[in-house]
Length: 544
Image 1 (cartoon, rainbow, N blue to C red):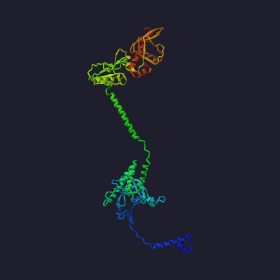
Image 2 (cartoon, rainbow, N blue to C red):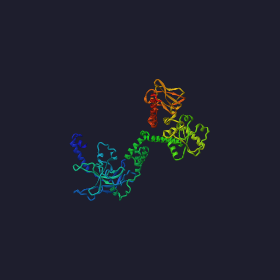
Image 3 (cartoon, helix red, strand yellow):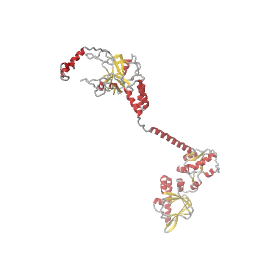
Image 4 (spheres, one colour):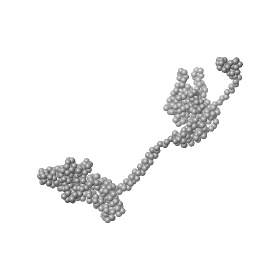
């Protein structure tokens, strides 16, 4: 410094003198300064744009005199600023009366953020802070004006901050906070807003007739909605359009970068389970629908046994046709009551005469799988002009399982009738013997088999007192060999074919099932065994 050199001193040699010299130089400089002030208000957008503003309407905040009384010009603490006409982001004003617990989001620039020494000074001013809370009460200020109480945090510098709801419309404007009674520090949770209805009232006599309308808003809203719905390409296009309308807004730039990143590096798409489920459902519906149609088509001429009984009771008197194959017909002694025999081979050759009116209800039955034989005959009959022809679903087996009456082609004992009613003849194993053949001998292992005489005759023989004696002579439909199964012991007698004989084998497993599930057959077996025991005792005692 020249003043120090004039005294022969170096800098920092005498600090007190240096400080005195600085003050003297400053005082001389300030005495000659002239300061001119001018009024100006500037609005700064988050993109850094500075807009000159002009006050068009003003209502001062509440002020108090020395006695603590409100001054006469106290008002609503609102100002209407006019800036150059252009496209800007704007907020709408809510016209709905707020309710307790309505959510509130306060947007502002509190001083605790602007003056924080640990934060960057480059762009902190341009990005608003958001605090969240809710409407916690309703009050009046010192001159009786309505205010909304909220627990959304606020600080010095938050005055004038808009408080918006979830719909982004302004609920109120921040006006004052609460201070402690001691040191004047802020008390959070008790801050106050100017209600939106008073803001609208303040604007009612101005040129602002429809607040919240701007070309920017719908474009920005469409971009935000598309982004959070995961439609990132659409969001990117809308956000780029919003950036063209008002360039470099902080929030737009933030979301724009995120949208570009999502488009550039899309997240792995989840497996489309919903579409797979829909596809599987449609395929299943198609498959099951096709199966249903196929089943309906196959069953369109089929009737259940109970329906046949209904036809009989209603007086339709259906004609029952026995169209079993020759082998099946000759094998089983059973048939439906008053059934007419019609050989399916003759039908196939066209060599038959039914002798029934073509409009008469005719029902064909057989014992083949899925009523194939009946279906073939019915088709031929329809070709010959018989239109009212039906198939008995389940055939002879379905009829007997329904416990409906049957007839026998020859005399059968009651036990034989019950056995035939409950057997599927195609599944029963058969044995054939010549006259004089031994079927089994006394003391043989029963091999878990009993027998029904299908044709021919059998003698039951036993040694009594050293002599062979005939205990019984059995005919068609008789059951024998069952006692050894129940006693789990060797054969108590021998069985010999008297003539050419055919036997049906009843296994122990099948016999037990019949006993547990067919009570009428069980009763017949009990009667048979009782008669057998009585007859055997009589033979052993020498009774005739």
